[in-house]
Amino acid sequence: MENIGQRIKELRKRLGLSQREFAKKIGKATISIAKWEAGDRTPDESTLKLIAKEFNVNEEWLKTGKGEMFVETPIKEEGIKVPFYPEATLSAGEGIEATTEEHFWVEISPDLMLKLIGVVYRRGLTLLPVYGDSMEPTLKSGSVVMVRLWEYEQNLINGAIYAFRVDGDLFVKRVEIDPVNKVITFKSDNPNYSSFQMKREELDRVKIIGRVLIDMSGVY
Image 1: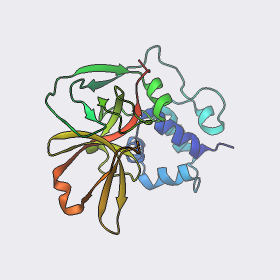
Image 2: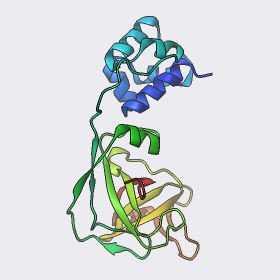
Image 3: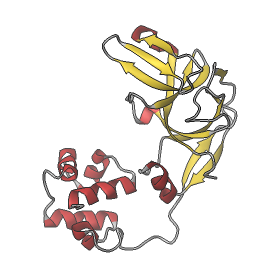
Image 4: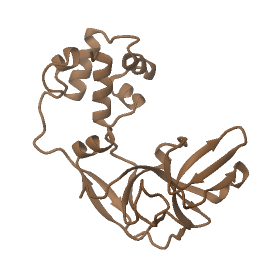
């Protein structure tokens, strides 16, 4: 059964806030948020009222799960504008030279983003097209992927797919980290393509753009 901590986590994700950002808004320590969400502690009555007031949350929902999350559902929630770089193609193959920074804006509703990736990011996103078949069946040639920019994460996730530059060429590959041998493998999902490795001292050639969150093809 869902508890208060789980509902706080659900609320925080719905708002697109990190534990640190959520804690700052209600004047609490980040560790307190972590303990609530883990079920190790439960916020007191005054804190629940503070959360409800700060985020316009239905206090009854926060305590029991009954009713709607928010006191009022906005008639129109402001969309999230994400830049799309149609010419900055990511290579699912041998690498494509980055030649343009021209872009236009795509508006994505928070509800749609929550449905697609389970969290709402209001900053640090971009849309990039993919060319080539080395990441099939995960990403097909012509796909458009949503990328969470590196400056907003700064932490490689083993097994995740990343967009990156090597010596100026753009790639999209799955990353496998070998901490023992200090080697990173950039792997294609298509078994017909070979992978390539880099040692830590070679990584100055790599500029990570960000982590691929989802293939947006067919969404619009």
